Image (tube, rainbow over the protein chains, first blue to last red):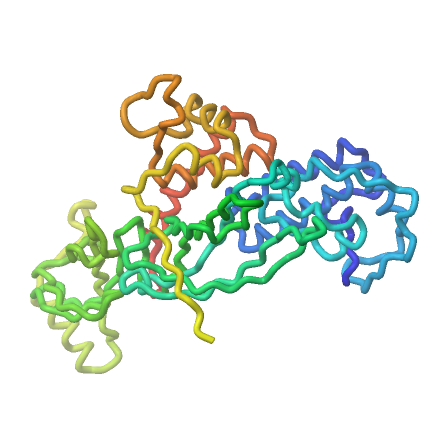
Length: 316
Length: 109
């Protein structure tokens, strides 16, 4: 397992005061909080920072960590000395980590397991306690929202074994994604959360829908947007064109005199539902290159015969 | 081995969830949800219920996302109720702006 340099992760010196560590944590936690940050690695960084703070905020854990010595480098292969933490007592409790937070093997080898769950005491309240709800994300394509799909989902679930230890169980589910889902909506799977204690029912699993970015469409709620390149004559004379939609090609009428940037609506061609969303097509007029004598001749003819000044409103 | 395909229920704008369901999904007590309602972060459905009818409160399913973000912000960043309410409003604004920005961004030539 890899050694983790918790001071480096927090960006503080080894002799930093507890206050400095707290300040560094607060700053980094705000920066990388998954509900706030759009950075790609935000969630991983947030967990890493949470783990580092967990080890350093508690003077006992910090002293034990410091005792490992200053010679370790981040990423180096690490094995804890056999009796390294003799004489230290870790009280646990008051853990920072999120409900899905799992600390690294490195952390667990130092400070033990059972800290990964934010509410270790919650399930031990009585003989009949409903299992906790779980939350996960599922990435789908825009097309899946039009047609529906099934997705395989792999979950790592912390659970208590018979001896009361937290063990991570791998679970794989096949889930139906219904037609008409939108970004950020949730699917609730009753009874797929943590098992209940005694006769109480299991918790539920909530799956949050996230769309993969699409190469040609953009999505806002249930409306979908498409940029459509068109030729000057299609725009000027009007035309009927084949236009892609996430549900297949459709015919679309471009009115004569269409300009770049206008929004043309294809009613109910957005994400299906009640009501269905619309598909907005934004035409972009593109010029054919003047790369042959014929093309240049046509442009010259337009120049001579069309009295067109697009800058009249600028007074020039 | 063929795996059973699980069908869940889609929580869309029309779906209502109970106070109890909201609490469970946020691993938080009802008092905490009531605080969020008092702060204007969450809005129960229907006309303002009486104080002793709070257990009958129902919310739109979209409140779930808001409540969970509030929970994460409070727990992870130590923000108080008023701060969470402000942060949520600002996050909503940023999201709306980013969506608009995305639509206006020119596609590759």
